Amino acid sequence: MRQLTSLDAQFLGVESGRTYGHVGSLCVYDPSTAPGGELTMKDLCRMVSERLHLLPPFRWRLVNVPLGIDLPYWVEDPDFDIDFHIRESAIPPPGDDRKLADTVARIFARPLDRTRPLWELYLIHGLPDGKVALLTKVHHAVVDGVSGNEILSVLLDPSPEGKEIPPDERRDKHGERVPSDAEMLARGVAGLPFQPLKALKALPTTLPALTEVPGANAFPVVPALSKGLSKLRGLAGAPTSPEILEITSARAPKTSFNGRISPHRAFAFGSLSLDTVKDIKNELGITVNDVVVTLCASAVRQWLIDRDELPRTPLVAMVPVSVRAPHEKGTYGNRISALIVPIPTDVAHPRERLVRAHELLASAKANHAALPASLLTDATAFIPPAVAALAARTTIDLLSRTRPPLNLVISNVPGPRESLFCAGAKLEQMFPVSVVVDGVGLNITVMSYRDHLDFGIVTDQGQIPDAWPFIDHLHTALDELQSVLQDPLRRAGRTGVRQRPQRSGRAAPA
Image (tube, one colour):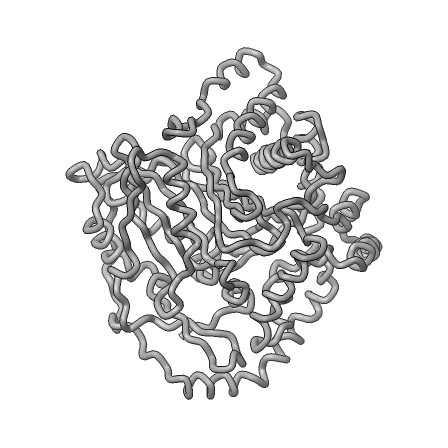
């Protein structure tokens, strides 16, 4: 058995009838490259079955400790049934982006069955031009962005012919015996004396940085405390500046998507040219992530302007950061931290907005570098497991009813530059699908693949019924940012890289 970390368990704890804790991706495939020119359920089941021994999380089943007195465990499911996890669906004709997105939103709003390994895979038919889609759902307690990519690297191949799969060398291929409640209770009681020790062990590195835990700045006294601690760190030799003080004391303004969420989701997706983004970042000597965050800030800014809701102060975003060390590859679970950073929604000029985003992100990174990599895990270790789930839900609920801890999530996950294949079918686009919670009803996640950036936008349907305007605004924002390129010929050459997608059909590939 393998015990969850306190951070992994938080992703289980926040779940309710309105909040889910799974993440995934919507991958669009061209089956013409596959044997027989199609991708079927039989193909998927065979492919996953052949690689199941390389995908430990796909066999992990959750086992709880009675009364919640200790963190749950993963056990290899002795009753694993692959047919339960791989399913089939279709969008009504004529298939288009909106109908596909609606199907994804409905499937994603259903919780995973906790009596089985926490993943599902849906083969979706009915896309234009004979394309098919694969929608994956994997619980965030099992994977983060980087370990999710590790799973994709196992499932996908560099050529239509596939790759050589190492043999299954497990001695016991039938899973583990599931312990009884009495056994788990005894294990939990035996672990009780060690819980205070875990908290004490994390105390020296965590306590000085508690004001930097995501959401802390929503409490009135924390911004002032953050300023004081930042000054003390400066006296101790840590990097500090007026910009870092601005980052640490920023408070999120209230918007219409920062309330209590409903059980329903809206989803939209689209792609932008990665080459164009790289031209812009090279021109100004910044990073791809600077440009991505600027594009997101621009799209949200325009959405708020259209509704006469733009706050005078900048919105605050959470930008997840992987802290997974090289030796932790293949360990799965969560090794993440987060930048809490203002984004320049208050800056009108596109070029100034881009420069401002670069400055804010650079300051946030400098501040984050002074924090312990294990901050989120260590901070959650202070909460006794018996009340962790209640504490997580209560805190999020209270913050959603007052001033939000942040406004939105922006996540940029680097992906492969080479073409990939699933059972011979060519992967064309890979749109992330993520989560929203009370107080944060907008999530923009980006995955790079080949020469394009694939955006997946998830919103709470009760607060933002239609997520597609954000896709339109992203394309407009990229058009505006192209004006920072000094070479008119190069700027003209990039303009036609990708057309804006139509409402009733698939966008042209990037």
